[in-house]
Length: 292
Ligand SMILES: C[S@@+](CC[C@H](N)C(=O)[O-])C[C@H]1O[C@@H](n2cnc3c(N)ncnc32)[C@H](O)[C@@H]1O
Image (cartoon, rainbow, N blue to C red; front, side, top):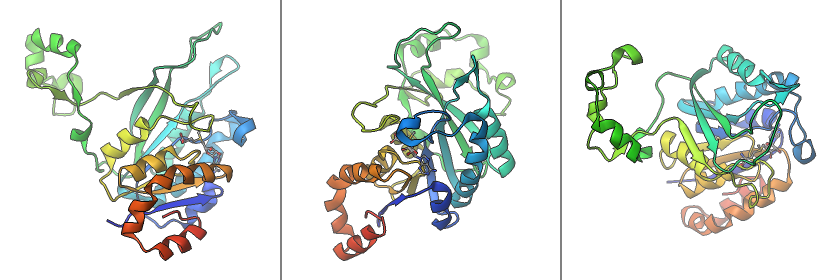
């Protein structure tokens, strides 16, 4: 398996143009949030967010394989006491661009900061919007199955007559959900809420997500040897996790300082790479910002 890690410094909008059509299996990213973190890497205004993002998503659509998936971690802010609508507008515009909005996962941040606001409670979740090019895409659901919780065991012990039949009415898919099929099973498919703690303090970045977040989606949507991309790399969580999971990785980041952090995190994997590639190939690629 010939793996690579390509790290690019620059604006995603431009760098993406160098990446071939239909070459990436999974794009997993958390872009800069509107009006946020101006001190660390500049912010895009909520009003201009969609206009700023669309040329990038156009390139992402081009580089993603037809069987691939794009997962976008994003959350709208409140502006003047109400939620801004730029994420909703972005979804609608991306659909016009040709994306299918397949699913929305929720990342429930188990350790969100406590606080008090006059008109709402603290933000404890973010969206993970799933987009695809086709209705059929690679998804390896068995890999993310979970243990049946005790609550589920109780639920399954007392099944109603409706539960024992196919519940086509409620599902409408033709498959139904015959709950009795799940009695006595230890593993079930997960739901679309991921309960994970944030991990900012130890990541040298103000907006890092936990390793477990890209890990779950990489497992679900790619095989070893396939290509994972993060066009807003930051301290490189996606890239490093992809490498650890034997996937090739492409990272793009506009702030050069993050490159040093990502390279140091990739250091432990250098030796395994030398076994797979010639050292001089490594050096020449390295000089062109390609790490392995
Ligand atoms: C939310 S952070 C990503 C953090 C990352 N997901 C992690 O946990 O490791 C977004 C990153 O995008 C970078 N960025 C902002 N605009 C960019 C652009 N136009 N092209 C490439 N990177 C950009 C920022 O410098 C920042 O590091």
